[in-house]
Length: 240
Image 1: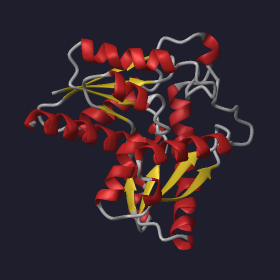
Image 2: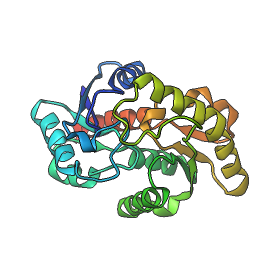
Image 3: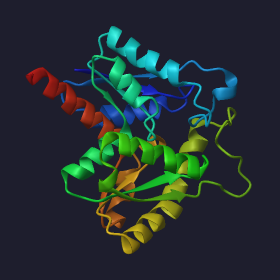
Image 4: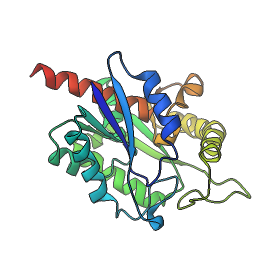
């Protein structure tokens, strides 16, 4: 089985670390490959551009994965950009981390809470995510949404920052996950009937195991969840 993981950003900045996470958690007989979009400089940076002018390129990348013989494609962003359009256009399974996480929670009978980094405008992100969940037909199974502060005093913002290194982004996300994300998750559990939590950014992929033992809920790693959902969909399609 071959799964292609598509970064919707215009660089391979996160590819080495994300690929190591995918290869570590891939099932036996599953190979994973990475691709990223080719985008103009004004849409580049370490995180998804807030202006969604990359949609056609993302759909084209999914279709290219199918043409190249991939058995499934993963869109590597937790807001699932262009997911439904790609699913409608491609003949192979196409998976988004948000849809995969929500399906996991529903499968466990768990109410899902979501934590996202606040680098993007939080209102836009929250509304986009909710619209997607309604389209998936599972919005009622998802509870509160909260945002983890990502700004560090004296440090530049990440969105649109083409000069930042992969190491600096990883350090920022890990620091804020431990210092801000864990308290936010605990507060969410105390205030709401939440039994599962999605840490809603693929840059957190591979880090959730570092904090899951501190949180009294089923903690979902978006990269690992989307990988295993893609594997399951391919296996299910082979039985039909």
